[in-house]
Length: 324
Image (cartoon, rainbow, N blue to C red; front, side, top):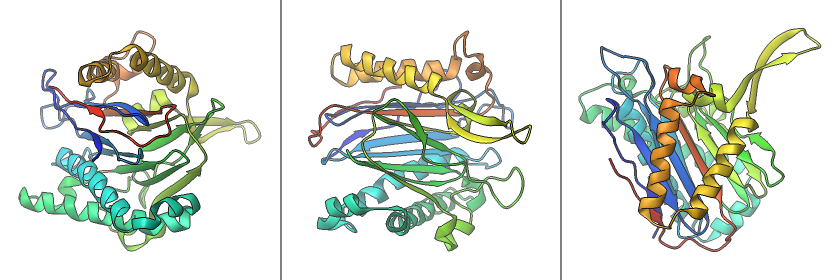
């Protein structure tokens, strides 16, 4: 059995929104995908997606996707990608790792994780392309990025195609970037799950293994990077600005702490965690007077926060809920 945070849709604001809420003895997850201000083809069309699940062993499976703005069915691509990525990773843990799964995780590094991640994402890509064919569309119509996370009590494994971002909060209070945004062959081009390069060459896949405990994990699409990351840094020696990839602790840490406080005082159950997810979605959609960039962001916005609880035991069937 697993504790799964199922995605919900909310059409109240003209966009389809996805809310994620999951509480287990090992992880608590709150996330949302909401639409930006950009109007495509005369209407708002939210093309981000997110999904989370906690296994019976207490391990976290998390996927976030951003459908390409130029893709006619980017929303279909993103939602198919997160759904299939979680399912494929779950099967990998049950099948490929088999009884050696705990030992493998203890010894895993990027070179060992890469072929597993490559196979998982290839399976995901196949499912996304198949979804396009069933919809009478082409591969490029469902182009999407994808960030996939597998986290235990001692390791965080990440695989990514595209320009998403993932960061981990260490017990000492420092944040560490686990991925860098991937670009395509040309300036301004993004690599997508439907692209051919990484499928043929696993070395083009972004993978990372972080060893040691973490307190929280944040995964986001580029619509949230202006508030959650420092994307530019100043090189004093060179006298110019350079590309940076630094999690912005003044934004991320207070939100993790707020989520911990809310979850600790909210009655356990679907209603409590989903109420927090709704508030989180409203925050990403509307921003605050201190963060007007969120309200004015043209791109769709996804930000999922997963907090490790004090318990190290396996996950009981957890409380998860979705509501429109």
